[in-house]
Length: 193
Picture 1: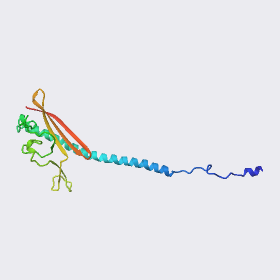
Picture 2 (picture 1 turned 120 degrees about the vertical axis):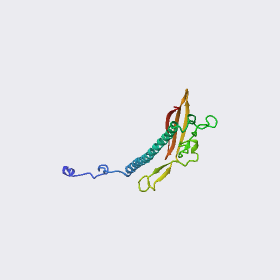
Picture 3 (picture 1 turned 45 degrees about the vertical axis):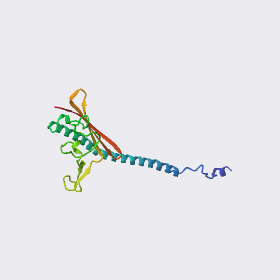
C-alpha cells in the first residue's frame, strides 16, 4: 500500500498553479491615463515655450522703441532744435509749450520735428519693422513691412522736486504677445544744460 501512495499525485487546482506574468487590462488602462497626462503636460509646456520665444523679439522691439524716444529728446534738446520749456508733456493748462503727448500713444513714425510721441506726430503713418521677403535678403524689393500695432508708448516728463534744471523722462512701452501682456519701462534724467 505504501507503494501506491508514493506514486499518487493530487490533481492541480488553480490555487497551486503559478500566476502568468504580464499586465491586466486595468493596469494597462491606468498606465495609458498616466502617459496621456504626461504628454498633455509636455504639449502645454511646448506651447508656452514657443510663446516665450516669440516674446523675446517683442521685448527687443519695446526696448529699442523706448530708447528711440529718449534719444530723440536728447538729440533735439542738445542740438538746439527744441528749448527747455518744450521738454515737457503737452497740456493746455499747465505747460502749453510742452511737445510730448500724454497717455499711451500708438507707435507712429516721427513727425516734422523728428521727435516720436510729440504733438507733430498726429498725422504720421504707423511705425513698422521690416522683415526680409521671400528671397531672405533685407533691403530688396520683396521686403515685408510689419506694423507695430500691438505696441503703445507713454512718454512722461516730470520735474524733480527742488531742481529747476533737471527733469525725469519715463518711457513705458506696453505690448501684447499672444496671451501675455508685457511692459518695458525706461527711466532717465535730462538737464537744461
